[in-house]
Image (cartoon, rainbow, N blue to C red):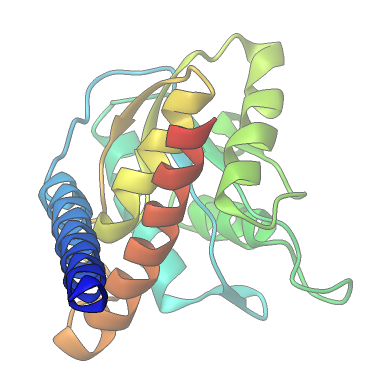
Length: 202
């Protein structure tokens, strides 16, 4: 009888834990999806573009759409400055930010309105080194540009750095089909969940 009682308690605890885990995943998923639809664009000191892969001397389709969105915001007068982020994948490659700068200049952005950081490898470093680049110019408020599903985690990181930052996801993301969106969403869910757990325990 005692073994049955213990076994029942264990099953109950396992079910409770499983239900809590599913609930947490659903909650975090909804946060990512709801925030992905927010565009908070407003006049700021600079537009900050989060870097991603390049193909040689050209932006990848994902980066290209981020750049196009940032350039549109620039042309609409939301900010006079643009900060491009992203380092090198290897010593023989151009930095993501260097490719971004060349692309933006080709599209009509004035070179003197562009700042870059070419050291970062991950999103946290994008923000860290971008802030260092912005500091000498007293740039203190930012529109953050990335893909929609990336925005929730990105803005949480910006908040941790006490940045005055607003979300403006690209409306023409290369992750446009269900086949491409699902892997990106689950990747973001994994990293966002980990980030939330670390934040909660810190």
